[in-house]
Length: 188
Image 1: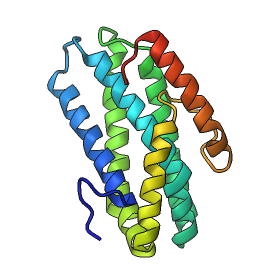
Image 2: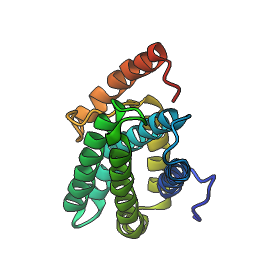
Image 3: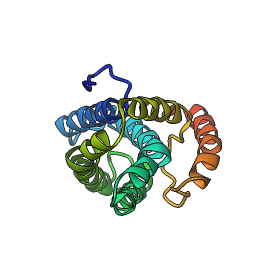
């Protein structure tokens, strides 16, 4: 099964998310030093990254643990990178572009995420593609897509990141985040 922009299998869904985040990073880099719309775009990227990370932790990393000989080590490494990114996102969330720390934190987030994407796309995703059937990849892609719809939109670096606790808490936290977004006027 080819992985396309419209594909709904796990590999296509994850890669599409990666490309969308990279496009937003490129836009943020293009407008470095300007404040108009920068905070909104940063908030949007944070929301998308949080949704993506929650979905990966709920479905992709357990699939790696179950299907790859070193899956536990790989999943632990990727989860650690998520935690590091969430800590930076949490700090960034409280800043505005005029803050001296904003650009440094945004640059740090981009570095972490770009490294994470490279790891997944050169190692984890190809190995999952080999280890899983097309049906399993399709099922995982659909689950990841559904999980992103219910996931939190704000970083929660201290929240559980392994099943079953993450699956139990994510929808409730996601609901609370969506209420906070609406009340604050945050458009994600």
